[in-house]
Amino acid sequence: MHGYYRSVSKGDDLILLDELGGERTRFTFPRQDRGRHLCLADFFRPEESGEVDVVGLQVVTVGSRIGEVTAELFAADSYRDYLELHGLSVQLAEALAEYWHARVRAELGIGGDDPSDLHGMFRTEYQGCRYSLGYPACPDLEDRAKIAGLLQPERIGVHLSEEFQLHPEQSTDAIVVHHPEANYFNAGGRS
Image (tube, rainbow, N blue to C red; front, top):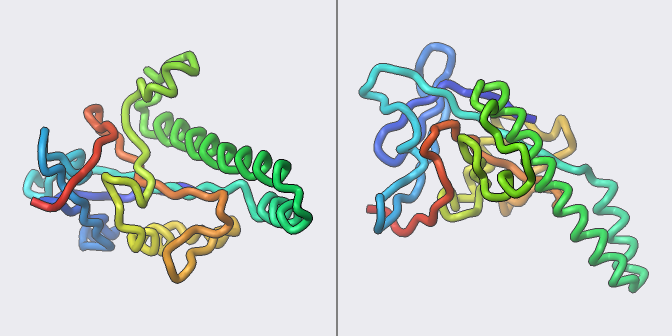
């Protein structure tokens, strides 16, 4: 599942707007404590510019059946088969997330310069980035509830636990940033 939301930034916050231009929800991101002092909000038009930007959100899953099979293998002490299938399923979820990210880039009109080879894809030689929750640029797992509220991923069988974990396990969510300078970075404490 994916969706696009009108947005603006304000300081370290990304504000998603409703149809009337009011605040729908807000994400607050950590800022790097060294280097360029970046945070994800920097890649969106600031509220004071008077211009509205767009942010993409996505949730993908390979479904619950693969989790059931891996649980059966584990219960049967078939650990090698369990590990191989589990590893494959996690990589399939990541590949699916990258597929949908490519689709979002195409829909936003920024996918035309995507690399033609796998090496270029691994080196993220394309415009925009897909930031998964729980990683340094957006570490707050509670933000998953905001994404779930907007996308309603239970329609594709994805549910959020009380600990803000996605179920089935082989699922991912992300904030998709289209800015040409967006890249992956570590963020430290707030400044």
